[in-house]
Image 1 (cartoon, rainbow, N blue to C red):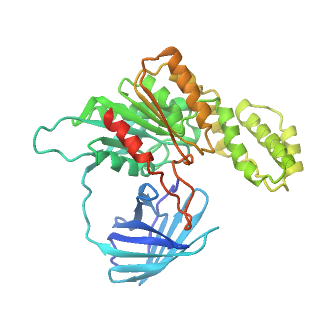
Image 2 (tube, one colour):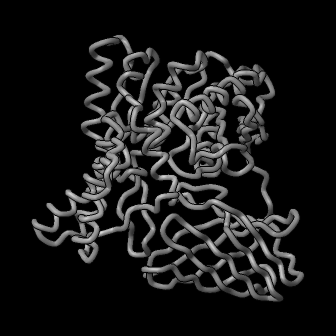
Image 3 (tube, one colour):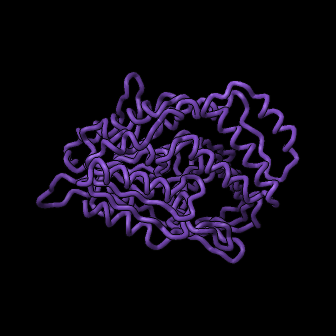
Length: 423
């Protein structure tokens, strides 16, 4: 989703540590945002936004020079730069982002309020790797304290830290459900390298996380489940089969077709909008089909692909293949042999499948139908719920408003949280 690294620079003394509430506004669209600035070895800033369903997202860079403030937010595709002034307990200024109209922001300092839950860092091990995460626990009741259920969040593809699932974790803990979020191997404080990790490696990391959470005295060991999105949802059945601690599964945007077919689906949706004619679409299909064949099926000769590059590199839909050293090629080889349905056939715990009807990265209807048919054939006793969020994309968001910020469908969170509370 958004960020990989956190860095901060302070060029002059300015006491801006604390919590700030305000908004970002662009093209007549205003979005409430909470800013948190903390001083450790330097200043570090994070932000929360209920509309974006994010919490604790770090800014990559924070610079304070006298009464001037600059913050840089780097996303997967764009970078936003916030520049403004500090006047006592107020900040204001403008921000810019490539491809979007400029906007302005305002914050006012507010009293620091401790979160209404306990957050503790846990370390766990998968072989020689130390992995780190945060456990969120509901407040301890004064009477009749009982063990609480828990959900372990499994990351999507890419360099996802624990911040990626922090918002959903806070939603659960507010409803009495503990949540554990952790840094993917090679991200944040966790050791290892996600770029060279196989499905077995990532599933084993999650199994180790589940075992660690099970050791916590306030956790009910019989009510621990997993929530996996995208890659995490695709690996969810493998994790559930390999761990004795999984009591239920939430798999959102989980792919159930062969992995090369899923990649082809995603790439076609990426290039087709820029193909202006039927011939363009046919040529784009040839190109991405050959690219996927090289990446996933090990087609040894690149002569055919090289000729397509020469033929199509001036087309409006064209994009260059990743460089030879890019992790894309290793990822593709490692995941090519993963067969989700083989693992779904062994699942024996309640399952919630959630998909957006406008998912452009995972074939939602085909995947859900294949999982349903598999479980119906081999384990009809398994409680399986399939829910489609109308109009939602791969991340369960609706098209952005005038300001360029997406919106959350009103039924997404109630459906997810309601199913979990029933478990």
